[in-house]
Length: 221
Image (cartoon, rainbow, N blue to C red; front, side, top):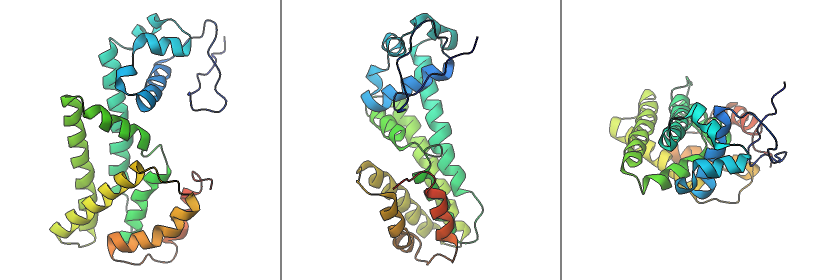
């Protein structure tokens, strides 16, 4: 029998799940992540998730030992997406520091590299959980270290590299947290100026074109 796919809540084609639909571990994770992002960790409850998917909560225990097991899986997904995505982009080979920063900024365009809403949800969760705060601190450290090493590869002195890395990282978090109603076209227009602020360098011909082509796959306006 063909299994009907589960659609995320934010999918415009989403419809209620009906009947005896067999759900997967990823279905539980996706819906839990939606709830974490929209309503906070306190609302990530097994019964509520089951009701949202119109399935029995007994299927939950095929995939997870407990609610805590699900929460741990959400944190693992966050680390594998956001921390690994940003660190990975910071280590991509590039001829110039401007190209390297543009590689990192691909995270702002592609949610598969960095899910901003998920990052904010985990930060909110960390305000009420010591263990999550510890994981977040470790993650922030890894991200800043990767950016610092990126600047150092282009012969920025150690302290300057750290300062530029922190300015780049925390500016991006604040920029996204502000929820500015900016179009993709406007952000692309400002990109050369931001590059000069964060690197002190002008991009080479072709670097901005490559970044624009990449970003427009995700920014529709």
